[in-house]
Image 1: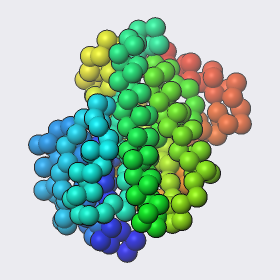
Image 2: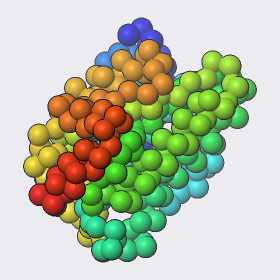
Image 3: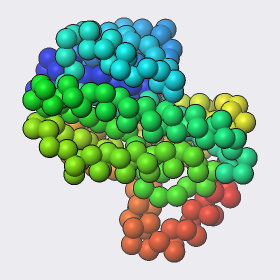
Length: 263
Ligand SMILES: NC(=O)c1ccc[n+]([C@@H]2O[C@H](COP(=O)([O-])OP(=O)(O)OC[C@H]3O[C@@H](n4cnc5c(N)ncnc54)[C@H](OP(=O)(O)O)[C@@H]3O)[C@@H](O)[C@H]2O)c1
């Protein structure tokens, strides 16, 4: 885990859940951090849990000027070694009930933000002999999920973009790690959007049964250190990925049944 010592790591969505756990654990491994999300006070709380250097850089990634934000992040330590695109927002609504505004809001944060931050950093990584980009996708980026049409679309799009970039780029020393978590016990369902933009505000049963955020973060950190291309991190629900891959008709039946039982 010397891999992280003195590395400058920019974590988005660092104020809670998986991002918060990543910050605390990476800091303990000697990394220097840049912490981004909208809520500055929550970021300062996370910073206070970090043992090493951490700089707070608040931003709304669904509506920001990415080149200016990248410049501000670069100014923190004069370099960036790893960008962890982790900020995200969930959905709890059918396709019919989801307004265009919510569809766009989810695409902005879950797809455009990681893509535009990455694109803004690529010339820098090329000039500086490499770097690493990590993206927190989702198992919903690998299969369709009821009441997650916009969320699954954004995560599938991110998967398509980053996998394509993996096989396209010719930047020496540059790598991309895609993480597809299953259910993780965080505030994701509380913060998820209804079709009219209202906050779901409830801890769903499935979310509650998820693996702890700290466990997810530990596995993400291992995947980053090993420069893995794609890792699925999940509890028992990981088998759904195999069913979707090898017996799709069974997956469709299970997903429909699961969808009718859950919010
Ligand atoms: N939990 C799961 O079961 C699960 C499963 C698969 C994938 N994921 C993915 O994991 C990532 C982290 O989610 P989480 O589970 O840790 O949920 P979370 O606790 O709700 O964290 C979401 C993070 O994103 C930030 N964020 C939300 N809107 C933002 C915006 N407009 N601009 C900047 N930051 C914003 C939030 O901070 P602020 O409110 O301070 O902005 C928060 O730090 C997401 O990409 C999510 O899709 C989670």
